[in-house]
Image (cartoon, rainbow, N blue to C red):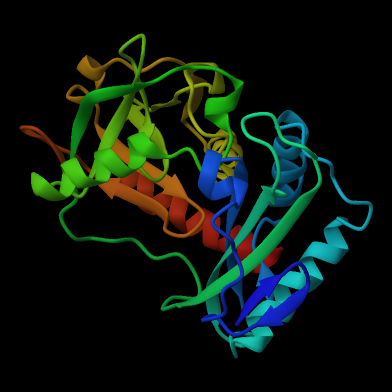
Amino acid sequence: MVNFNGTLHDSSSNLLSIENRGYAYGDALFETLKVVHGKVLFWEDHYFRLMASMRIMRMEIPMNFTMEFLESEILKTIEANQLLKATSRVRINVHRIEGGKYRPLSNDIAYNIISERLASDFYSLNHNAYTVELFKDYYIAPGLLSTLKTNNKSINVLGSIFAKENNFDTCFLLNTEKTVVEALSGNLFLVKDRVIKTPPLSEGCLKGIMRKQIMELVTKLEGYTLEETAISPFELQKADELFITNVIIGIQPVTKYRKKEFTIDVSKLLLEKLNTKIRLS
């Protein structure tokens, strides 16, 4: 079942027209959530990121788009899909309504919510080999728009195809200054000599919800220092550990980049603290 503007429809229903602005111009935003037994993880952070993104995109935020309203719509959707007692991946899509070309006729919005089952309730560490390469065909232009979750994801699509064709699990993306920004589907953290680095938003990385959670945990991690700073490709092979974060996987350790193999000690430590934080919240 799909939630379209508050009404549930069979997932096979034809809900979006060819004139949909998200399809025609990428004039859309989305949030990907993890919902565990009816609890939306980090919901307040997701909600405020979505509201801030809609303001940046000059979308009209409906008066009823409160945190409570959207949460109830999420829960209504997963209940309709018999996922209320399971763990699910939920995506909220917000697009400007039809009309106009590049210049819209209205800034009003429509939304839809979709869900799918996930296997694991809490975050677990993937101990399988996970190899990464740089994607250098195209670059992210740093700026406010690059921090948003919009439908303009061409570089992520092309990078994913490149990774598959060359037997990599994912790729790191570079910005126009040739510094490492993030992975195809998550933020990057680098560990070297008890310093944990992650690129700042000014480098062009996504304003990730899990990025925020991990940064908060690192600041409380005894013996480690957090730095938001640019990361050069040269630093990747000098690192002790690399890991990628997003709200679905939690923490994904990188085991190999080119000829360098990495430890996963900090990833394991942070994942334990992340699950503890979730259980206590």
